[in-house]
Length: 97
Length: 177
Image 1 (cartoon, rainbow over the protein chains, first blue to last red):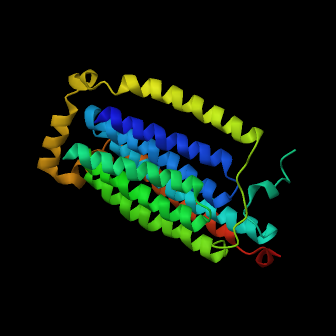
Image 2 (tube, one colour):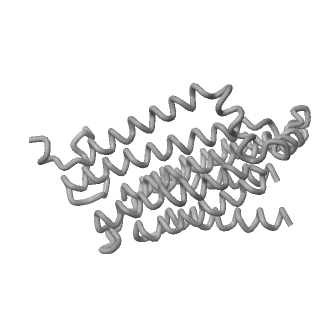
């Protein structure tokens, strides 16, 4: 079952990174980051089953960081939306060049 | 039985992930994401990580996704869909980069998936015994409050900083003038 779990984890990570690159809606990009974090968590849990309980602790910390990241990221999205009236990241190019 | 459950959870997780990327509105993506998170938590249960499965449902699918939902509805992004998918050269580049990532990860994980390599750790039996003795929460809590207590306290600090940052960032601009 370990190989299959790692395969699922790879697939989730790749779908997440593909979505992050291809979509321009800031909220969906955030969801794709969460997807990638979940893929990593899945790999941690799968391997921790055979190596030791520490892997699950790392997942615990990753979840906390994900929660903090979501809170700050959504605050940034709200503040940007207030300014630009959109969440399409192609419109935020003030710092691009 | 375990294998069949795993396959079902894996299929839902991957289908939901594709739905997140392909969803037209943020709401649809979000609901697909909840399906993915729920089935990933099912996979956690199959790997005997019961506490994490519960946390995944309560914190991730419950709290974080509801936070996303609040923001989507607050900003009224549920309808008037605008096409936001990159096309052309960018899409080809994205395919190439993610394909390369998949290849590298797949190669590494193909080796990591060899279970006989882990036999010397003997961790599966040890974890099962620890769960039987201490319970699903105790087995996480014991190292968390001994070996990893500094990291745990720093996590609390991180959350405090994140709360303050979120409040400051989301504050209306007129308030500071």
